[in-house]
Image (cartoon, rainbow, N blue to C red):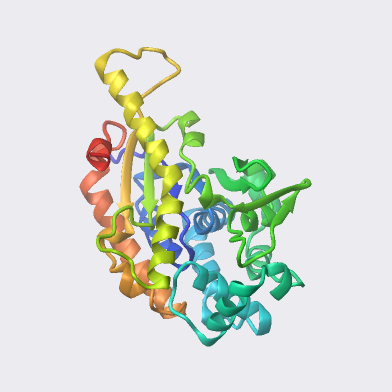
Length: 336
């Protein structure tokens, strides 16, 4: 008899590389032995999270897959976005270090000398438009079978803010994906927010309250990259990777510390329990440096989806038996 196991997902942000995560999610949705209890996401991870949950609410696993595909197609260069909206979306991808289109070079030049309040005075945000068109947030808030935790960074105090399913709107997701050099700050209830990746990419701690003790991290920003960055683009890309992994590494250190105390018998407080960490890393299967030079064509997103789906299926085949019993990610080796 097939045993269904619950898992929680932690989805990193990373611009167009989030299409790799889309592929991983496809693999999970296709394997009916796995049930998603909750998702924590930031930036592109947040978009994947709401697309999956909204699609699941309306059409189950098939609906979730359909909604994810529609979202990524809408975000591609083939979707027909026009004018300044297209240029702004190109700029978002460029800010994450992707290959430059003419509009991206123009936006890069403007960004070096002006803020988004100057070069985007109308506050055009194509992400908000896509989210409003594709996601039924009223349904999501009331009918999502999956708990969602979406991270954003409070600009006033520099702290993480995690929004939960019942309060989510398009503004919360655009806040989670608000790169401040590209888009104007997103203000919610008089509080300004920037990209959630700065303080939680993604946040793990909200998942500790779930019934499942298993967290599968889909990591699309590599922790390690050999060699000294020497060009301006290479330096900026590596700074982004380090910055957007920092909070995640701190949380994984804390998980490892608590696990050690439990194993040693030093910590027997029932408030603390073992967390089983698992990971699918894009850098293990995709040449990120080469991929990042490609533009966001639909064919490129499909390529990343295929790579993510393959990685997801391989991970499930190798690690399904471990779910619920042990970690398959060696945290101690990670920080050795």
